[in-house]
Length: 182
Image: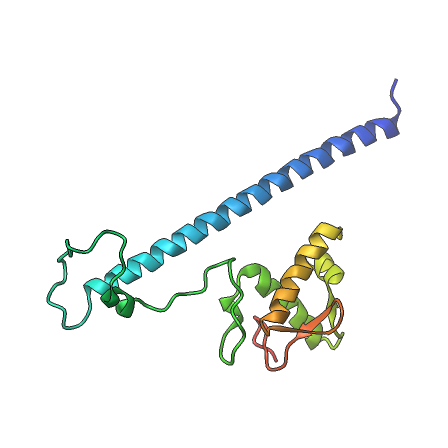
């Protein structure tokens, strides 16, 4: 007859395996979602470009398709009529500049900025990646911590964060986080 502790360990192991399986599935779905959002963003940009080309002011050729230009070749008129490219979600961290809101960043980067901003507002000094992982409810394991460190370093290189000491991050001068503080 198995002991009560042994039965509890079996149930705990089964629950842990289920949690791990669900986490893997959630990670897979998040990756799939990121790809779908990227594709959707590209289609939206394409739609805007086509709309801009077809509704160019003073252009009497709206609705006429040029047949002498090979398919896939971009003409000068299309380049001039194109709207400026937007930052693609989850793919780029733009260089910080005055007036650029934190909403230009993906949600992961916004969360990092918000946690650093909260820390600054509370006067608690720079934030480490282990503390970020704990604040985000992640397991404090090397893989998760290094993922956060990579993102924080990217924010440092783009001017959003400062790293006054190795592994400690704070807001860069004049940068306000998603909450709008300084």
